[in-house]
Structures are given as C-alpha cells and as structure tokens.
Amino acid sequence: MRIYKYWVLETGTVNLEQGVQEIKCYGGSNISDEDARVSAREKIEKVKSRIAGNPNAFDTYEADIREEIVRVINEKAIVTRNRYGAQVLNVQDLMILDIDKPKESLWDRFRRHADAKDKFKIAEMVWLLSKKDTYQGCGFRIYETRNGVRVIVLGKTFDPRAKETVAMMEEFNCDPLYMFLCRKQACFRARLTPKPSRMNLRAHKVKFPRDAEAERAVQEWLIGYEAASQNFSVCKFNGQIGEMQIPEAVRFHDEMTGINWNKKLA
Image 1 (cartoon, helix red, strand yellow):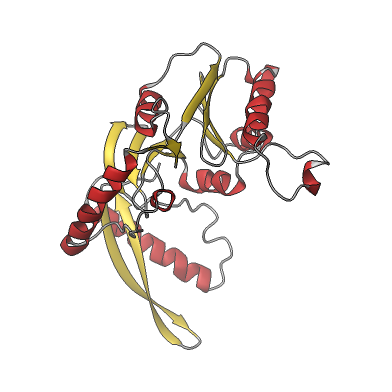
Image 2 (cartoon, one colour; image 1 turned 90 degrees about the vertical axis):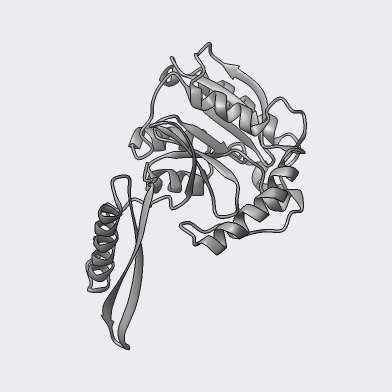
C-alpha cells in the first residue's frame, strides 16, 4: 500500500515547444520528509522522461494514496479520509469485491435500467461461484450497499496486482474502475462512512496535506458530516459463506459501516 505519513511537494521544470513549463509532484514516505522529497524528485524525472519520448517511463508506476491517515488498524489495514471526506478502509491483501451488477444474460442487454432484483442476482452469483473448486477454502462475507453488493473474501490473502487476483475479480464481475485502482494503488479499498451527497450534505473538497486554514475548514465541515452520518449505514450484512475467523480489519469495517443499524444506505 502506498499510504504515507510524510508528504513533500517538489517543483521542477521541463522544456516544451512553447517554452519552459513548471511541474509539481508530491512524494510520500513513512521514513522522513527528506525521503519523501527524494520520491517527489523521482516522479519529476519520470515525467521528464515521458515527455522526452520514453513510452515506458510509467510502466511500473503505482499510484500513491495521498489521503490523511485516520487510524492504523495494523500494518496491513489503514483507514484514511478521501477527497470528499468519507473514511476509507485500505487493506493490503484482504480481497474486497465491489460489484454493481450481475453478469449480463442476453435478455439483460435489452433492459434499459437495472431492476430491484439485481442485488439478489449478484448474491446468488457469489454463492454459485463460491462452490467452485477454485475457491474451496475461501469464505465470503456478503453486504448490500446503496447501489450493489460488497464482498469480503476470507481464508486467503491476495495480491491486488497478481493475474490470479484480476481473474477472480473479473469472474465475480467486479467494477472495472475499482479493479484498475486496486492494481495501481496496490491495495483493496472500502468506504466506511456515507457519501455526503447521499445525505444531502454540502460537499467539501478535502485536500491532503493541507495548511492550518484548510484544516480548520475541514474540522468545521466534519462536525455536520459526522452528525448526519449517524442517520445512515453504508452496508447491510446479508450473510457469510463458509465458517471462517473474522479478521480485526473486517470487524472494524462492520462496526464503522453500521451493518446492524437498519438505517438507510448511503
């Protein structure tokens, strides 16, 4: 996971046809500001290399998660606050599937809108796939979300960048954008608190790192956000396939998302 305590913004220049252009890159580190500065400079050099015509400059690039660390559950599970203020669980090798729709049949392709049975079809798909020999030894915790289903896979660890992981996520019809981000950010992510827009709450762009003035604005906004969040859940627990021990990160996920609150999903 590319989540860091120290962030440094470095500035560089690149020669373009229209003249010299300034470029800025953040570098992150869990060691020191100076180490973060080195990372930022390396990014600037990658940008220069790409502009100079090297098509492979970013082939091995993994995206940093430049978000405030809210809580460290353990070295492989960290909670951050995303750009619109929600808390997000980031896990290194605990697979989380984000599924918005079941696999399409020929009839489904002629439908204009998803019907109310889609979540049931997704859960049914997960149940059927869990019976395959490939997934023996895995457990599946199934949650209803506002627009689909979230599945946490237990009993086995997964590398988000591995071909086997990608193949499994594709078989479970995982959201393509989510799959792409998992690979680039080298972790799985799950939102723990509601989206402000789903609570009719004024949006606030949460930047990180931020100066003292921006910090005051965020803290003021969080008062209303956290109060409104008490009236909503993010997930509803629908059941578990397989008798598996529940990891600490999953217990924290269940508590934060309000799976037993029986409140409107947001």
